[in-house]
Image (tube, rainbow, N blue to C red; front, side, top):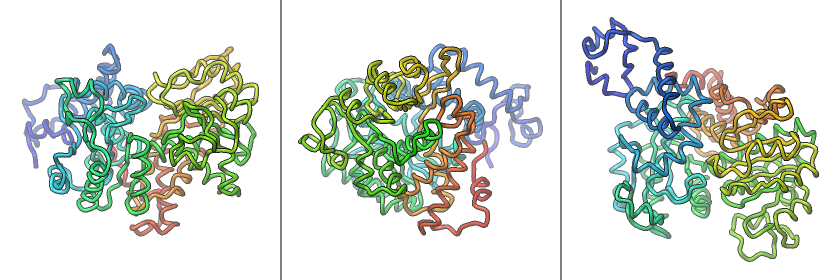
Amino acid sequence: MKRGSDILRDKALNRSIAFDRKERERLGLRGLLPYSVASEQQLIERVMTTLERLPRDIDRYMALSSLQERNERLFYETVVKHIDRIMPLIYTPTVGEACREFSHIMREPKGFFITPDDRGQIRRILANWPQKNIRVIVVTAGQRILGLGDLGANGMGIPIGKLALYTACAGIDPSTCLPVTLDVGTNNDALRNDVLYVGYPRKRLVGKAYFALVDEFVDAVQARYPEALIQFEDFLTPNAYALLTKYRNRVLCFNDDIQGTAAVALAGVYASTRLTGVAFRDLRVMFLGAGSAATGIADLMTAAFVEEGLTAEAARRHLSFVDIHGLVVKARTDLMEHNLPYAHDLKAMGFAEAIEAIQPHVLIGATGAPGTFTQAVVERMSRINRRPLIFALSNPTSSAECTAEQAYAWSEGRAIFASGSPFGPQVYKGRTLRPAQGNNAYVFPGIGLGAGACRAKTLPDDVFRAAARTLAALVSTKDLDQGAVYPPLVAIRKISLAIAVAVAGKAFEMGLARAKRPANLRKSIEAMMYQP
């Protein structure tokens, strides 16, 4: 049993001046704390007051990071209590700036770093991590961080942020979470030449050596933490698909950029049909961008169309892609393997011409290129549709294809808008509209909670469709009246619980659960949730 200053130095035990008089006496804390005894609510208010006094969001990010290291319980109490205010500070959009500046602002080392120098020893060095009961791992190679590109070891901000959301949004015990960066170098010359850069200062490991290192990491995790969920995050598109294809049917894992984004986008489209009156099976969807996020959404939508009675071939005819070279068509010779199923037998054409030719109901941006949904694009979508769906999903906010204000103004208030990063409420001609944030945090924490609760073996696409349907069903009439196709984030723990129940239920149904199904699945999962 720790006592005195050892308690105050332990982030999981420290409660600062919330320790009452009897606790201070019993734990040897008298004299180590000032006289005042504060309630947890008073401490939360103190944190929020401090945050609002700071001049920049990156300063708030650093303050919250420091709090997480000192007083973990207070950190999560504050995040849960003020999720709509805090989430943009600990994740998108602020985490993008935090990753760019990671080597300059890092105070306390967080997470687990694996480099090429660790080859042959990864299983052994994993034992250096102090916690042993690891259930959720978020791992990145730092090569495609949000829309910011190759940030090398600076990408550690992403696993740290994602795991904070696993705890805040779904009650995953923080002691069971492990953030990992496969620091295999960086091709970002500015980083390698920065004397403060904390990462492996060489060009990126590629090819067989790269995949061998990932293999060794996955095998080491299977040996040390055999029931841990591995979430792959921000891998370069070809590597992301290669790794997902290799592991998805034999390891409990998923790629959030591909499958998490897909589930959230599919949920938003499902919910939108209640506003547009267009049946899901009749929708035509166009993607601007043809990388892992866009193709992941299309793959899940294909399965959803098949579920509605279409053949896979017919389903793909509902989905079209435009990339930097124009419409994805069969005649092109520059397509990647994951794009080939969506190459249609049409003539080559640009973005604007493709909208006129295909007349999509839904436009989804996953480009990382700001401003690509121009006024002409939104106006064209609005001529075609009574209620056009405009999903500008690129992160951070500076990379959004258009802003909420632009989407509403250019569509005369008729657009159903969703974005990857948050936009505040907008007033258009006296009507208040709430832009929906298609944040992956709606689904991945609940998926992790459900997978852990049933001790799932793998996570097939059926699980992600179940998560999407559950999220869509939680969108209320009030939400839709405000133009939002997602429920408010303030209800995120209830949302995550509902998704966890759906995910675990689907795993039990498919024979993928290692645990015995409890009599009351919802109560059983709710009882597992960490309460700060």
